[in-house]
Image (cartoon, rainbow, N blue to C red; front, side, top):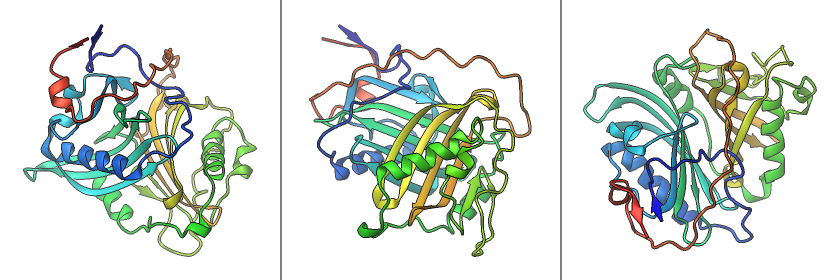
Length: 311
């Protein structure tokens, strides 16, 4: 049987992994996310180990060769924020970049979900939303300025919201484009600020609101193919999806809740600012490939991405 980590045929958009009865190891998942960040810093794949045989790499909702993506560039990471989902064996990392490792301008804001197989925690999916100049409301310097002022610290255990509450809040928010009643279902907080690209809806005051600029046309195409990563310790849920109403734009929304109310929202959207093109039919999405289990640890991405494997 032949495996190609570069050209695996299936784009994994649906229910990536069956729900796992036992919690996944936070330390191991966090360690891989650290290696993922180092891969960006060195502009290479040598840091990435424990890669599953049916590994898929997606960038802006398209399956492609990992060697042809953003990892070709050595970047200086100006801001990094990671959450870990110990139920779904996954992580989400937000990166803000203004320069590359040589000090040249390299503006990016990147949101990445990484999914691990239960058991051996081998990585079977790296799923990135990569925005740069020309993306929706993009200015990484300004995004860095605003994100650096926010407090995404650990929430005391007794004050944490449930997974269900976080998902309901995220779904209600993302449903507003096609369901007017969803507006009232969103647990709006005060203060709450939304960082939409590089545009900030608040100024640090007690009356800051995330309701600024919410959709008034509630009969648009839905935000579909949602993929979730949830971390109760930070009161945070990441959702990657397709904004069908915006020419099927790849999108990332991350929400933080405090005391049952939304406090922060970060968005990354890959659409040209100010341009609404005719909306094409969403892509046909195949069924997800099964996640492998109990693979041998320690095999690096660089050693396995060179050629198809045979067994």
